[in-house]
Image (cartoon, rainbow, N blue to C red; front, side, top):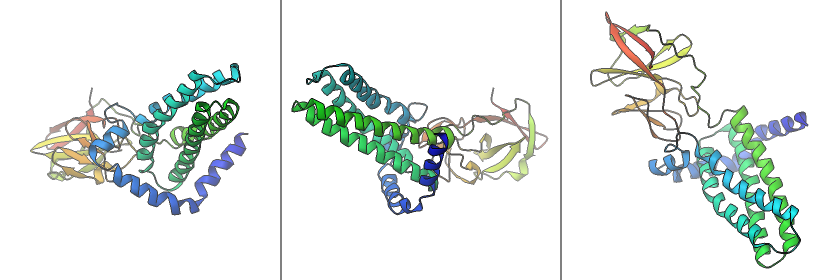
Length: 284
């Protein structure tokens, strides 16, 4: 079974013909979700982690509950299952919107798998809408068949989503496993640092970006928490640094995320200057 599933994933990842549809669609969604308030709301910047995984729990839970009642109940119309299916349909809207926003920042194999993931979820939603209409008209048997098929589609979508998250690292904090020493470490001289010009240095194997702004020096982990982008190649705008990959913005003073798609703060480092040498250590 594992080999079959792995082969299926690889086939999707390598199916470049999907790009003809997925790439233009991702650009459109990216433009729609670009405004900061929209991006932050859908990314989960306000929540402290990605919103989409949590948002999917309600529609899946509602639909699964309806399915269990259908399985254990009679073949007569049940208002409870109808309401559960309806709740799931409504809850699928924010789940789909947040997923689309996250997906618009992907490229290549991840975008292709995400596109099929979205197709499976869209199929499930369509089937549940039909099931809801059948339930309203008292056609219980056909409604149950439609909901069962929808749950199967949700299962496929869930597997693909799990692959993106757990094997491809989509939506996880890309700095979480980096070593952050608490010992002061000499990294460069103050003469190498220019005002508002990010400079990447290494603390052991961990890249750190130094920023001189208004006569103060700040340090953040250089690997963007969102997707691993190089913050040192980004632009400093006022008190923020902008990731060059997806436009996430972080305050240089404390790493707080100001604009998504990042949803967690960028790790900070303490900085000091000793005899014109800049030293950093992980903020305690």
